[in-house]
Image (cartoon, rainbow, N blue to C red; front, side, top):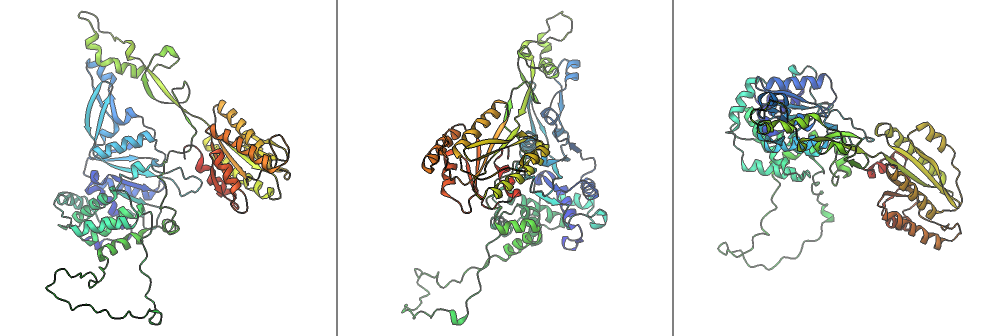
Length: 604
């Protein structure tokens, strides 16, 4: 049975599993998006059934350390044999099979970089514990992504270092995903896959297919050079699965649909507009007195006589194949143009500044060091460092006992994230104060909901009249925030200089206590109260810029949201003076304001 005769229900899901089984190491793997449940279990069972019998099937824990991934010295075996004995890691043990990465949207950066390196080289390069080895590690990676489309949690995403190297993407939440009764939705068998593996090396790729795939990637804004290469591999695997000696149009459409669609960042240029009516056409130009055409004249320019070259129909088919499978949300985003200049997602979550080599925090490995300097001794790594040298250190005739020297000592390394405190500096002066304070209250409540997860804090400093006061000290309590923000008086002058000075002092205090402060100013920048409390716009503006320069010198993360009805030069000038990001947001709701604040917090 050919590819065109396969069942339509769950066809892409079953086809993706078959393609991965045909060329597992060539395609890299798949980004499998969807919650744990019958659909995902059925697809994984299908993939495992199509892989060769006896292929490794390893699950990679989310927080597996470097030693567990790469391997290292087997301490017990080394001490027993009196020679270095290597213990393979998870990546080497999965050679020739599949590696399942659970909760891939929360994978640490170190794990992602190690996986990307092995995907690039096909081997584990072990350089640790006095060992130097290369171990084969050719497997397909199944990144299990359980994230949900939530605008309030944009930080949960599979790192681009991994998705860049995975050819396929499958969203089991879509209607075209694999149904629970997967066996009824496909007829691929291990025999089909085994035969396709034998044919894969001999499948030919026509030049026009290659050009069309590259052009389609360019049209859809796929900037990565790996994507066309992955599309070529998928097309060859599809042809081998179909029993074809060369890649055809159907195989190219499969490659465009499975490889290029989820990587699209823009819509193709629209076709030319309809020609104008005959009564709207301009008058014909007068005939030119051109000399008669001489066929024997090679110097005559024939460009004017050549009609426009039509677009390649194969490329049109591939473009439409991509368009047909774009999810509605992605298509709307492409039409709005919000993905064209989108920076790559870090997927590492939000966190404050990182403090390294501290006695507290999360253990992140070991290093050589002296435990007498307040560091905690790591016994196992110390023994691993000493074990390979026991034969040389043992004098002849001496009893067999472990000899550890100072250079073998390893101490635990810690990494501690500073908590983030977002300080809202709210302009409570003027007739529009009520609207601005309502936005600030809603944003604080939304951010506090995230603080329960990230352990961040929020503070509010309001300024009006002749002074600035801390309305809400740094807190994580949602109930306390609601009580304090329930009734904030408004009106009076705008002591912007005093507000900047107070915010600067509070931010430095937070830094000294170990926090990472983020300052968010909500103001129109129209200062009319000087630093000494006297009225006057000229002096008030000069004092505000002077305080802004001091804040800029401190190097703090700062955001200024212009709350004027129209973007004002005064607020922009103040933002430039303090080195803040300027956002004209005259009518922002609480959700929009919260999203803007999260975009400038450390770690986003």
